[in-house]
Image 1: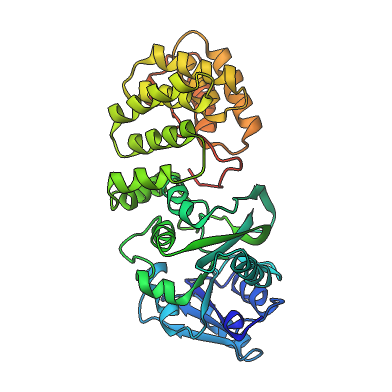
Image 2: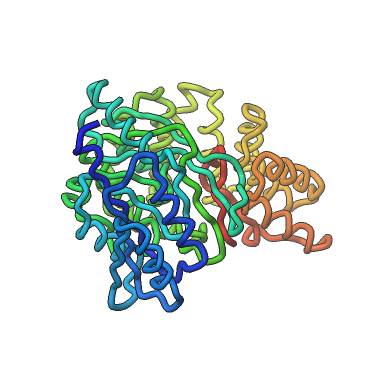
Length: 396
């Protein structure tokens, strides 16, 4: 491995991270492929985080602590770390997460593998990861993605953030500088915003091993699904709809998949009629495409056409009985009428397939607490896009 590949700086933003910072830093110190430096940027902590870091730094000269004069947010802290780092690559890790000891070695090896295959413009590498709780206990399943071609990355990431967290991401230093780093004006989805800008610079490498342990607890800034969606909207509004369309259809996927994904994007951009038009074409081409029927159901929910919404979700479940979002949405619709028992069974099934599914959990609690009283559509929680195979852990 060349010296260029070995030149990696870790950047760790911290704010009142005393509970976990030792475990985080030790996971970086113990990397099988050594880091050239571990930069800790304290963002105005009021606890003893800095004292803990300074004590640990006496045992390893690669640990370098910088203190910002006041709390500026995680994006500013990461950007400062990028600015002072000397490595050709930057490995990000948040102050409460853990890097598996083979993380960096496997990522650098992946860069070399892709270069050998002709992808020498890789600007970012990430791996599968495992969510853990405050005590370190594993939660849900492993969050995975897949390797895609460089020209497909932007389209895939416009539709959904497949990395979710900056922890464990390895990015080329020069590319980070060229795109301007993290946007400090974004308080949510700031990492996704950066991935989208990097995706227009080069390809992403992926390692299909859970080499990062991402901690979910009450202090996580990314824990709320509502604020996360609001942040996503701000990011998407930066892009022209034609650019989005070209990027989505550049993916090497069947026409109906790209078309339905584009329709879902039009829905997110509040272009409902345009999206519905695409879905009509999709279902003419492939009447058995469950995603097309689900999205039609979403359109009808938006239009408060409850009869057609119900029929669309029923058809979705005929084609895919494990479709979690359709189970929840149909359950919500049935909860309004005289079929509360059927609604409960659908919600139970959704929660059995997707433990921790917030919309289904909230609807179940609503049905349980109303004790036979009528429920209005405005009280129910509908899911507007298909679920991931493994759900993120969010707070309510």
